[in-house]
Amino acid sequence: MAKLSIQNLDVKGKEVLMRVDFNVPLKDGAITDDTRIQAAVPSIRHLIEGGAKLVLCSHLGRPKGEPKPEFSLAPAAARLSELLGKSVTMAPDCVGEEVAALRAGLAEGDVLLLENTRYYSAEEKNDPEFAKQLAGSAEIFVNDAFGTAHRAHASTEGVTHFVATSAMGFLLARELEYLVDKLAEPQRPFLVIMGGAKVSDKIEVINALMAKADAFIIGGAMAYTFRKAQGYEIGKSLVENDKLELALDILKNADAKGVRFLLPADTRITQEFKDGAETQVTAPYAEGGAIPADWEGIDIGDQAIEDFVKEVKSSKTIVWNGPMGVFEIGSFAKGTQKVAEAVAATDAVTIVGGGDSVTAANKFGIADKVTFISTGGGASLELLEGKELPGVAALDEA
Ligand SMILES: Nc1ncnc2c1ncn2[C@@H]1O[C@H](COP(=O)(O)OP(=O)(O)O)[C@@H](O)[C@H]1O
Ligand SMILES: O=C(OP(=O)(O)O)[C@H](O)COP(=O)(O)O
Image (tube, rainbow, N blue to C red; front, top):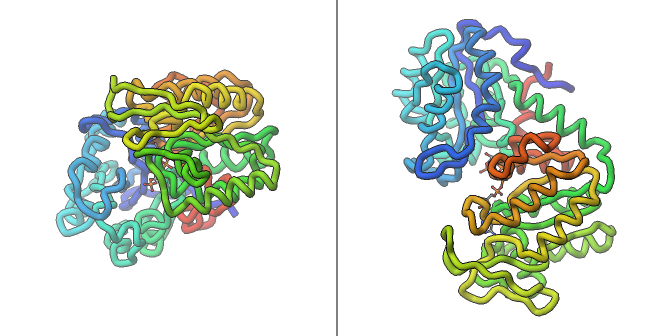
């Protein structure tokens, strides 16, 4: 069943609470990639032009239930204001009396951005009392936060129980349409490239994706959990020690199903996590390579780049989620850049998903050379897995 769209709502004079995903990368307080803000603009404009009193809410990063100024959404309010060409008021909080007063004072066409919902642990717990406060006096809730639609949080799921109407925005609709349709019958071989730092989230979906994909490339921090599980030394690299058994199970499962499963043959390592730091490439693991105790993996090695590029070239559908290394730092970016360029150069159907992956695609100039850019990483993987996303399931039927 299709979900209700904002296209079909009369919002004139009504208070509308819209969940957006303004979880954008920041450096020294400045937004380094505003793709997610731009992506929400069509829904925002539609609601403003329809005469809504618009209240936006989002999380940013993982502040773990406490107000932390470095996770403030204030830079997003400033950027949105520039994109819309009109003022956007930044609220000092996401709930409470002061916020309620600001909401009550909105006129038709006004836009208020609430402060980071994850300043409260009640957000991720999907606490009903917190959800009720977020809903406040809004009659209508709109979800346009595709990147967070796989989370059952107060601002994505809970809030729908405290408003009269819950609908999807244009971005959410477009993502669902594209990802579900394009990937329903993928051209084969179908390759999934995974990397990044959200290891515990993403490793959980691999077994389920094996029913769909013919091959996997694992880069980024996730690779070290697999290598450690296989008994290799990984030094100070990021690792999820409670996922070692799962990693072994995945390797066994891939073997049994005949799914190609590529781990990086070698790793670029450093002792200092900063640009210009000395880096080395380990010997291939198969030839006794290891990461020394006080070194850390920060990118895939040169042999891994060669292997991964070859795999990319022989694929017909590619989903890429998660950078191969710490691409934000110039001297650790080579693996991500080479894989990105290889993805862009194929004539395969190519889908790049995830906040940081999209940032990497923009940085390396390949964003307009891929078939589809998705604003969601974890969300697109769960969709691909065939799961219903809680933030979508909670919306009203059309
Ligand atoms: N080897 C690594 N060690 C530490 N961090 C890494 C490593 N490889 C990639 N990362 C980091 O992973 C982050 C992106 O991870 P993630 O949020 O999972 O991706 P996405 O947002 O695309 O879903 C980037 O900031 C990058 O610096
Ligand atoms: O950046 C996000 O997801 P992504 O890294 O999977 O694209 C979303 O904003 C969700 O953030 P979360 O993974 O902290 O819940």
